[in-house]
Structure formats: structure tokens, C-alpha cells
Amino acid sequence: MIEETVTFPAGSASLTGTYFAPESTPKGVVLISAATGIPHGYYQHFARWLASEHGLATLTYDYRDFGASLKTTLKAS
Image 1 (cartoon, rainbow, N blue to C red):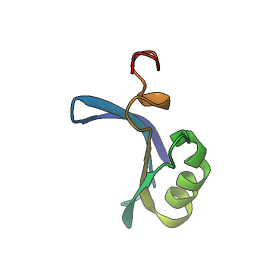
Image 2: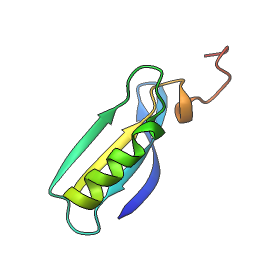
Image 3: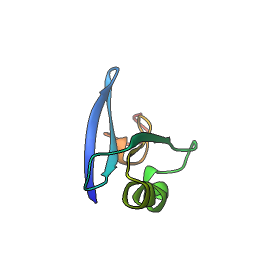
Image 4: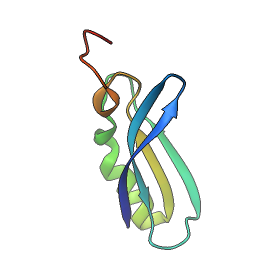
């Protein structure tokens, strides 16, 4: 299984997340949008299971100005 940290643009901000992929060609794609106030890492076990056991490429991410997507202090955000 492949697991890598990714950063991608979202309007004027950039979001950070983790991409999980099976070793073979993915059978499909899953986007896990976290619950408000829950860091994307909370879903890592589920995402790994989707990728390794079901062959689904999966992306988890943190919302703007939260968790790994926080680029400044929370107060400044």
C-alpha cells in the first residue's frame, strides 16, 4: 500500500491530507471529509483498510486553518 502526505490548493488556501492507494490499479476512489473539529488522521485506519483490503484509492484531509492545514496560529486564522 502507498501512503503519502499531500498538499493541494483550495481557493486562496492550501489543504493538507494523506493519500492511501493500493499497490495495484485502484478499483475506485474514496474521499473522506472529516467531521468538523476532527483531524484527518482520525480516519487513517479506515482509509488504510479501504486501500489495502478493498483496492480503493482514498484521500483524507484537514479543512482550511485546522489540523495539518493550519498554516499560521489559530488566533490569526
